[in-house]
Length: 428
Image (cartoon, rainbow, N blue to C red; front, side, top):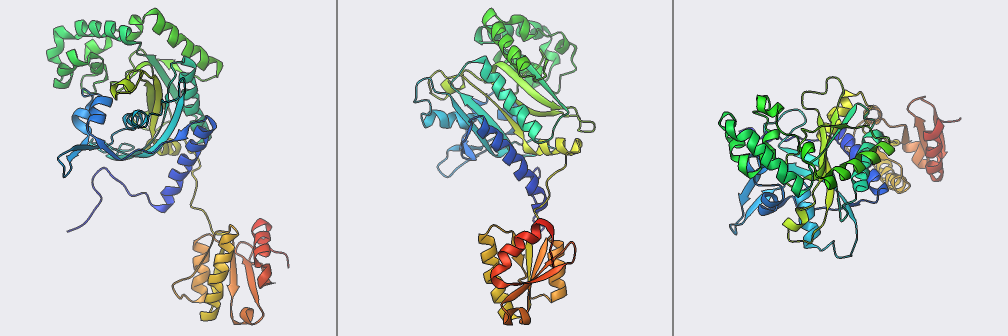
């Protein structure tokens, strides 16, 4: 029997891992500059965390979660997204304990959804996300979007379109909800079974249906922006004004709804406009969720956040021709001939690594020519050669692989000479 990867998963090999590390490093640095701090939550949670936090009318909860029973007959679920877990932790650990405090968090890690695998959409995928909890200030919405755009800019992504909408407060959404029911109800039998069940539970979700998106009633459905009360309209105007002041381009799309039930007020998606990126253009999504903390038993606490798939960011970077980082090269490769030289090489290897050099040596008992090939294959800038003569004279030969120049140096001068060789070649 052949043992293979489960469908919808992937191995991240060393040449690809450096790209992932690059994206994660940039995202972390930007978040830290915006005073966001890292939080890490479990890969699995009690199922109720997601049925309550994500919403039991969503496709995620109804169709896509990996749920199982443990030996104590408890229902557990591999996390399909990060926000619900972060909010659960926020409440459980009483991070709201300091009055009028704003908690700014970021996270990264694997998520799991059972859906049809395709480019950039896997059953196990990695998300990077942020959550800001404790403030209902519209300027914070703009800051979160500015953070997202800064990450993209630092990664070299420029072919982007930011789409925003307002889902309004509870009163605005209730008014819109009744209008949607009135709009769809006479012809609801023409829609899929999911939409039919959503009509009374959460009719806003009908607008996000992929099966019925071409139905004529979708194009004439009441827009949430027409039902915003004065407070919600003013809030949205402040968000847009701040984005304008930050010189962040955006489009307002009254049909934009998020796939999770906990959003209100600002909702947004970031899309790639790079030629050849693919039919599914969304890179990132997020929005404000002013009622989610209460769902987990915490105090009334507003929040806003976003998450993006690292896999999709990599596809966008490739589509835009962004130069991707390569596997790091070696500073030096030690070529040792004989047992005593290998022993000396092992000690030197340790000394150089302590000095911050990236170095390696042969452990396969290869001949000298094969060791040089290994050095070249690993992109070593220099080789450090230790043979019988070098041992007898307490010396080593440093050869610059690019120029072929080499120099014999005293053993105690290897660290200094190697540094000089890496900078600009060797001088006889």
